[in-house]
Amino acid sequence: MPSKPLPAAEVRPRPVRTYVLRQGRTSAAQKQACTRLLPRFGIPYCPRVLDLASAFGRPAPKMLEIGFGMGVATAQIASARPEQDFLALEVHTPGVGKLLQLIEEQSLTNIRVIQHDAVEVVRDMLTPQALSGVHIFFPDPWPKKRHHKRRLVQPEFVALLASRLASGAYLHLATDWEDYARQILTVLAAEPSLENSAAAYAPRPAYRPQTKFEARGVKLGHGVWDIVFRKR
Image (cartoon, rainbow, N blue to C red; front, side, top):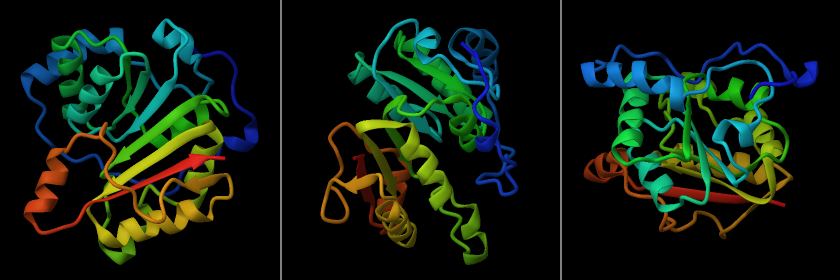
């Protein structure tokens, strides 16, 4: 649970948000799931270091899922990898409620949810080398050029993520926007503490299920690009 704050040098203002809070419909069941299950499986954002072992009730490899959408892929991966714990981040209430429903329906014990901005959670709550892996699947592409500054994958955030990875841990991103894939590849390749696991783009790892976003992209004729880097 929260203990001491991170050094003041890492606590910086966030002038540019990488998301907008859309007015999506939250179903009654999703609202009820948030009310009933967030006290059990949720962790409130707090600008202090989070004791991950205490949060999950055990020492185990810790994975970070950023922007889990409706949580289907997160639940599938966590179910298939019970020996690992998954800290899942999402800002939108319908997705949070849906993942909580899946946690209850599937009796999953290795997922905790934080409903807050991922950049602030990583910066303020996670310690260096705390993570065995990070998944960022189909982040908002912000397709208009004037909005590219809002894309999540920027050099400063990648450096921050890399600092939270243990040696040998991996950072896996997937997108169905080719120009964003090129940007991701360029930004990750420029981070000296990371190395690409492939010559360029990686084949889709077996653990990543096809999401509805991927299926939608395929129907629209988009490609899908997986990028997997490891911490040196």
